[in-house]
Image (cartoon, rainbow, N blue to C red; front, side, top):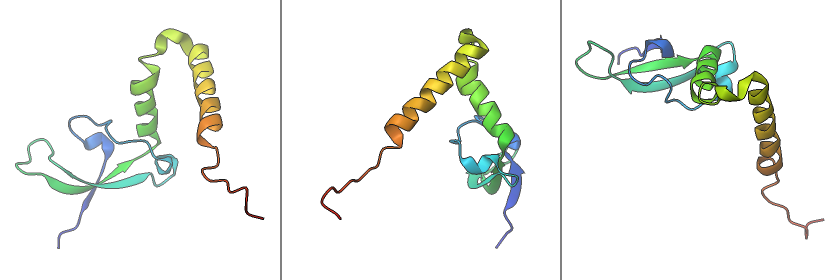
Length: 103
């Protein structure tokens, strides 16, 4: 059995920002994901332990949200994110199951 090499998300080729965000990316250790990838110059794909960190989250948010909506300006973006979080609290934090017959 060979050891799985650990690399940073920065070493990925192709679309580096295809990984969904995860809260563990904001921790000191980051988020580890075992992936089969082919790096530039390698003839075949190999398995790597890819570490995603806070910088990945910031780059992801910047590229996917801030840049496309930058016409709103900083305050406009902050207000939009505030509205989005309010919608999340309203729609996503509802109890999934309520049984009124239980005492």
